[in-house]
Length: 308
Image (cartoon, rainbow, N blue to C red; front, top):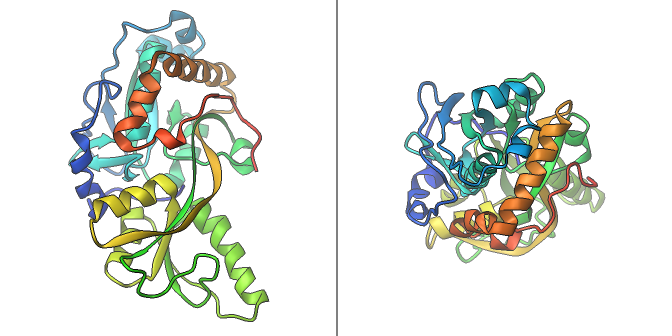
């Protein structure tokens, strides 16, 4: 996943309200933002009945003392994380709230540009970050990543595929993507090279800071296709009704990870164990279900799994 500022509500964010009614108890309390939406905190109430004191003791002392886990996210990637008005919601938010409750703390989310989240964790601005981060070797070199979900890449085209997009041969086509994502940084460059090697015109890439803008470009006909993480692509099709459809199959599935500072190995292990606990008691499944995330559920939650 990737970079995306949050000062405006666009297509998917506005439409995301349609799914909010499906929220379950896994999303504990209020996630209302205050102040500057570019990087503003939202305090979330976490149920403490199931809190594990031993796991809480593994967190940094500052988190134990305050009872608050500062979590960075970029709320422009529906259905995983998005804004409804000034409220941050989504699958990742529900998962993180459930983890925080198990740890005996409450999550306070700060909505910020995606490309600032890792540095925010490294610099101790956040205790953790959750924002559909694909686990890869480059990120694991900087931070700890705790596996909690799995997603692949999916292409999206206008309904009926009027431009005849073939994801395996999109040379010469206009394709939109969010800047800083796996699709932008790894997938499309490899496809560009394949086009060049075959003597074909390169893909014309429209890069956007926001996934909403990348989606809107296809809806408006400025791009013939877009590619994004599979749950995001499927949600875009669902929320835009007859405007879009999926193209091709999901490929290159990889795990998502919750980001924790490299030095905080205890916190990373605590989050791993908390995830295992909420998976066992059913809270994890309840957090995924309202957002259609069941197919991406994982059964193990290792810290820094083998990354590509």
